[in-house]
Amino acid sequence: FVIVFGGYELGWFFQNNSAQRQAHLNRSGFEAQSTYRDEATRQIDNVSAIDVQLVDPSISADEKVLLNAQRKAVVQIVCNDYNHLQGDISLNITQFAKANCQPK
Image (cartoon, rainbow, N blue to C red; front, top):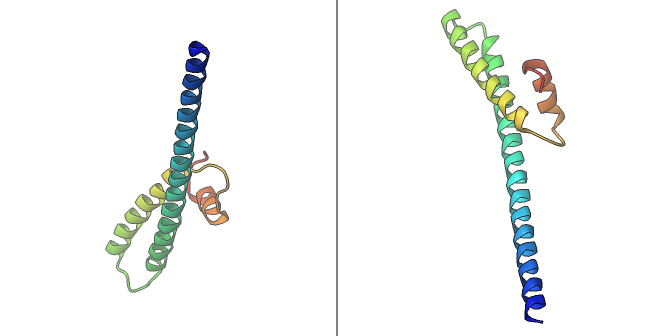
């Protein structure tokens, strides 16, 4: 009886730990996906702001060179975030990635 009960308790212990570990992984996965999505959206807004500056006639050619370099760096951030996303990805992020990133 002691062996059966001990085996049952040990099995329950491992099953409980497994469930807790899976719940933690699910939370971490959701949090990571939310973070990547939020960051990509923020950086797409930054690219849009840079694009507005690039067409401003009052911006000098030297400043436009710097803005283009900044835009390239921000686009790379969005592409890196996009490559980490899974599941439902907003249309805004998907369209931006198709236009600016290498395919997944």
